[in-house]
Image (cartoon, rainbow, N blue to C red; front, side, top):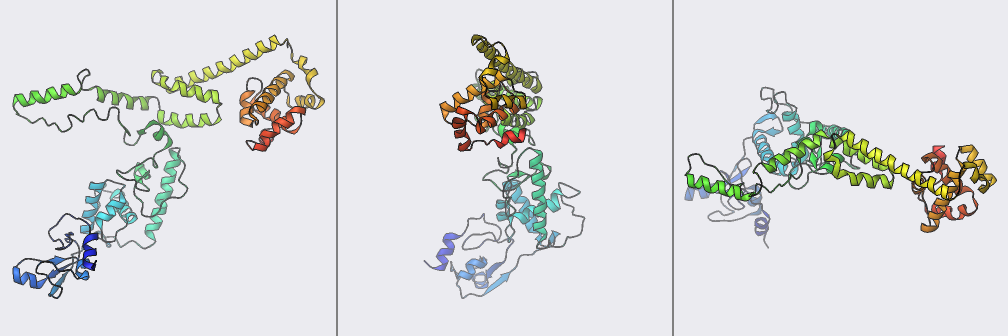
Length: 451
């Protein structure tokens, strides 16, 4: 395959402009172009080539590589900055209009001229977003000097710090390795603007979303859901156009189609339901509540997590988010009381009427331990039995599981001390409980840190 054929096979498809390459059809309106003088004299028509095709020696029509040629340079006049010409400013606006803010890779490719994604983002942030005449640039100011080589990197570092602060404010951890290169828009930067690495499609993605927005599927800065309720409700009538003074028959046919799209529901139902869901998000502060729920579930027991999960469908019927949370807390307390009642009934059935009845079942080391940490003998005996039974059943018991098992008998700190004591001493306890200790689920140092 010749050089010319390789060039033709690899060239991009561009919309022909006023001056386009006669071989690869690339728009040369704002680029250097090569004009064939002999073709112009013979046929009266322009034959222009881009520098790449001309360097490859292509021949097409009356154009021969031995013909005389003229090099025509594009006029470059700076408008806002010395290293950005007016035509590049125009292509920057066209790229943002076509690809959207944040897709800087596509915008940079549209601008061309060697402009990188980070350079396009920095230029737009400097002369448009930070302009005193925002959203328009300050055309009355003098042309700014070209940005220094390291200035773009410094600006990118400053923007990355602002993004991290915004993520921390939204309750999201910053990424392990921030993309300071030619990234597009993915996260949320200063003022809620999109920045970071560009996803495919429209700007803004889950990587820039906070945890609360990801859980709720709601974008707080736009006031919309990621996927609206019945998002395909308007598909059948999306292309319908009501023209003024159209024939009554056409108008009636369109209205009949609109009624047929939702025969059993009013036409405004999807809009009303979407508005109700947005109001519910704001009324119950679900964006903040999602972050609080995530923090609560970290320290909650398994039963409490299951209860919260089961109660979520009833949140819309609560008067407020605080009322719903108060209800869940009361139900958790009720569950703990049920466990204590079950313990008392079991103690009565075993004819245990007072705490000193269990003192005879303790060794000297256990009695000394209970005195040091103010643990009731009966609670210790029941807790020890529960832990040993669970250890023999599963083979290993971690600290968190142990605290969950004996939460009706002991507090979290007391359970940690008992767990640590059973790991260190105790006839049958040491052999069984040490299996959990060797398994590495949690060490006894947790109890020591809580002492």
